[in-house]
Image (spheres, one colour):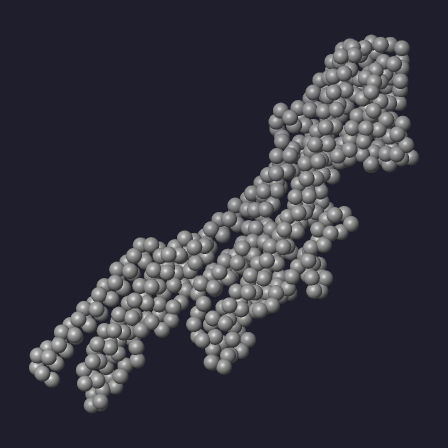
Length: 507
């Protein structure tokens, strides 16, 4: 009698198998939009056959799903992580260069070219009538506009430096957070898989965390076999390394520490060893490069590089205008200090710093270079002498002649003197700086776009393997539904046979 119910058992096994397959399909459909989710499939195979009592062979016992596995290509994951590091770095640098270009805002109606054009236009008007106080007021105002341009530009660059400095701290904290999450998921996965199952959804969550982490810093992640469990399974440990040290080692994680040096700049080091962290890629490296790169010794040309370029311009321009001293150190013009004001004053500096008077400015150093070395784009101003009295603007080369314009004409000639900077005139210097910025920005855009294309290609390959296709899942749903219905029909047929056999024949 037991053998006669064998077919019913096989049909029931078919019901269970189809039901499991439908459950897996349902899970896939529900997670079609879940980030990082990998399509899951049931490992279905024929169940263990049973030998016949008469020795004529073996008969099948149906089908069963022995495991549920996620469809994943580990090689594509490793490739994605390695390329994501470079993408994180260059995309961050691209954004930083776009912000810097917006600060300089060239060409525009409010950029340096417009400001210096207005200044020299005012000097031209003053040359026509050196005794006109309205024209002198115009020169003073356009001079203020030049200094305000430098002050504002420097302030904005300093703000960008601070923003990047804050981002360094934020990214270090994010690294710690991701490390803790990966460590905790490692423990959940390990415990869930002790009985031989595969924690598919937890593994997806861990992979997604590593995806995010790889964009921030140059990590290497791998699952290593360290032995065998008592069940005979391989004992696997997931590890994430950073600069050769363990960020995550199975159930343990190492924290990074953010510290602030004397310049209020954040550094990052390992909390336990106190060794400095020097990232080789990712967003963290980009923020550090943008914040610290001065372009020397092959360093990245970050914000300090452009700040120093502005400082150099402010010093050299002011020195040439005030003293008539060009970049070669030679005094080739009388300069504003060598001219004579409408009130007979002489020795007055047009440009100073921190709103100092000429006397205070001269007291800041014993040599010309020592004084101007203290001048920066952030602190350059017109001198308080000029701010308080426009009659001190030194247009004349000879005293006692209100209509004399000899000195102001020399100051106008300075604009076209190519010996002021190594790059040429003042406009040439700024054009060279803007061109350098444009080249750096284009490099960042090109590298970012290239890496984005590579990342997208890898991600598309990952999705083609691991992604959920609604059309495919709907086809599977119909297939498993038909199999379920067929098994149910088999049960109904066998039930009818048993009814006839037992009730109809009286057995």
